[in-house]
Image (cartoon, rainbow, N blue to C red; front, side, top):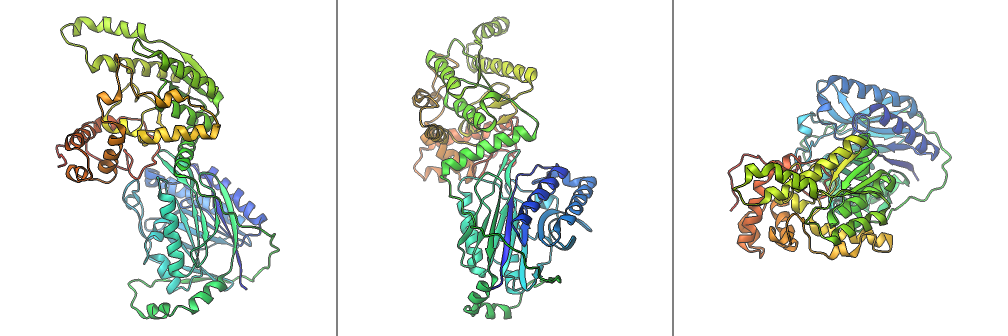
Length: 578
């Protein structure tokens, strides 16, 4: 029986770190060689990191990426290496090179360039127009890239039908969002079964600015069943032995393929590239392909946020994080994530009570800091606040108190946190959630001040779920129960509650999801059972605060549509949804 040992190197790469990325690829090639792999595959654009964005417009960046590819050639003796890079001819291409016997045996260029959501590939790349298949000692291997696999009639169909590919390897950089892992796995299973082909899918892992790549690489049988699965949100090399004879046997029983081959094809450009090298029988150590367990939805989100925070700080050279600890649920969650990402010794939490801060919130902040074992400072701001009021009183004397005085407190706190940042070199983490960020229930240059917004795409109700999940891991109330049960409040005026300004989060969060993520109109949302006045109020707040969101710190995307590059609305905009 014909056999091939496939390795999938699910690795964490850094955009622009060409030498570092190449070194990591070489390390994983060596690991795959020790396991006698016949081929090892790396993620999409592994040499450059993904997404490289406007670095791709710099000719020297393209040149250096090609030099990085050349450095990999000596490491491809007696083993095929499939690696993502930027190819250059008349234009540039998102490409995959198959390296073998220290040469570039062939190149596949991505066909379908995503240009929606967070993707801008049409901005940079030209589409490929060939569907090459590689013949390695009688085993036919098709290669394609990320988006190509999402189209049922795309490259996989051409390669399996006209090129008789028995194995398809898809190299990918598919970013995480809630529920996407399950949807993607179902899609890949359908592609494998529909095309009666062994499907190996290798995905990038790690954080890159707002994006998180979950990994979850897979090897699927020709029946669409999982043979090997990498863990989520961590590096891994997964290896499995596959048997193409099973593919041939299954296809013999499917007369549809014979009929389809007779149909005219729009682009049957399927060159077969033969790797004419003698078969070297390797002594292969026995292995059991790993099948990592699926994670719960909340565990996925928590691990995504932790990885995103760790990689953002680490890849940008920060060793310490600073945040304001109010005694509320949002800052509690961010502090817990920061500890898990960086270690308690690298976190500075600052409590800055004002005259409106409740004693219970002050106590909760102190207790949380003790539980998490972080560095803790308490700096009351009442005297500073009174100084501001005194300075402004001659100018505001005839005007009543309003949100101005509330925002002053938030901005004093922002100044203090940024002072610690300047003095220590630590990065300030903002603590606002998606519900607040959507409606503008946050202070520009106040609690929005900072370098990274860990939970800016996390709805308020999910914040509570994440806190309870973290407590379940600890086995006790690491985040004190009093934080989770108190009524949410900014505590910027006497007896203030979030519900004074916003609908209950059980109502607010679904409206935000329908409007921001699904683009539903007012009428469509009202038809779901929400009161029109409430819907109109929420949407008005979302629309009015685009200018504020545009000035916020970058943060981790976990929903289907996050603010920022994922959702682009004009600040100056008079269109109103009905």
